[in-house]
Length: 181
Image 1 (cartoon, helix red, strand yellow):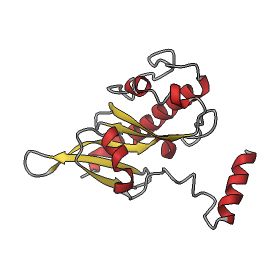
Image 2 (cartoon, helix red, strand yellow):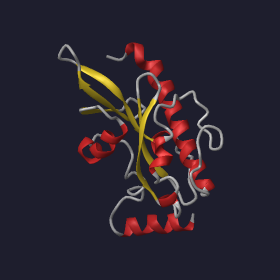
Image 3 (cartoon, helix red, strand yellow):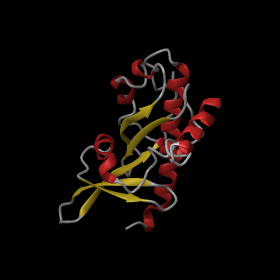
């Protein structure tokens, strides 16, 4: 906590708002900035739109058969929905892609400051475990998700943030779906 106060003081001294770093990977209407991660998390989507009606997220579309757009899925940052979940050293920022059916399409690792992430949550084998999982699956380390490494706090936090954010997004999206265009 002491280092966070030091960082905030440094940012203010540099003329930046204290939350500048923390806001770095929040969902905002800046698709070019996040397009690489959106393409990873929402395979098959060709265009993206930002939506913020209390649940900031991106919608990925591909051309439909009749000239309209077909929704491929929703992309959202774990830090927007699972704010209290922290790894060993802090937030783990991932962009999760979810199909309208509530099935996870893919996860894009955006940023983390975990000391052992490079051989745990950064491994492709870790992220691959989430592809095709329903938001109703347990998504628990040791149950249906392998830790891949011994970085227990980091692995558990990453899994928990994906599970909690995907379930929250599914609840809000599926509840709003009948009235969505």
